Amino acid sequence: MIPRSELGRVGTTDPVRVYYLPVIGAMYRKRVDLCLELCRQGEKVLEVGFGSGLTFLSMADKYRQIYGLDMDSDIAHVTRYFKEKGLDVNLLNGNVLDMPYEDNTFDTVILISILEHLQPDVLNKAAGEIKRVLRTGGQVVIGVPVERPLMTLLFLMIGYNIRKYHFSTHQQVMDAMGSAMKEDRIEALQSIFGRLYLAGSFNKI
Image 1: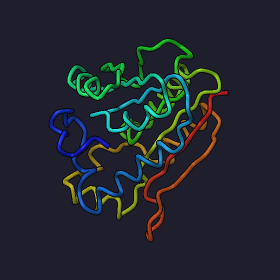
Image 2: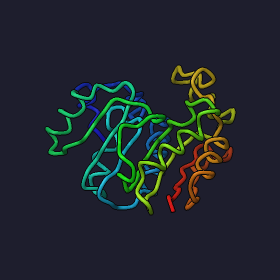
Image 3: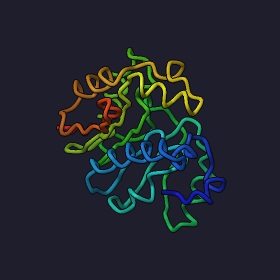
């Protein structure tokens, strides 16, 4: 994790400060950990929707080259921050529906809480684009919230009405990815109320 005292230096284009809040912050960190645990080692990893680069320091233990694609992130600012940490990252602004990478480039593509923001009718296009940039035998790791009343309430507690931003359900996301690639593992973040979050790994075969 990026030290809390350094958040201002790395930028705040994503809700990164939520990760340091009591109680709810622990849940946010667990969903990221759930996704990272599914990542295998390799040469190149691409995170789509990297925001402030919250995962980069952890992924550096598994991959030699870290790439990132984000629609809004301040590329120069985030790159400079991680370079000061001794980590060279390759970042671009762009969209998962039209990624600026060659075919068969990455060992892993990871998207944490990204695909639910897409309309259902473009999920298959996103899955196809992810598959295109993956090498044969590579994996995509996705994280997606399971919408239920508790999840909606937790988001409202931080001033975030998910109905304004989440257009696709977890099932629609998983179905789209499963239609493009082979399902490997699905892990769930559980609570006494049931599943709150799903992390899935799919392989390009």
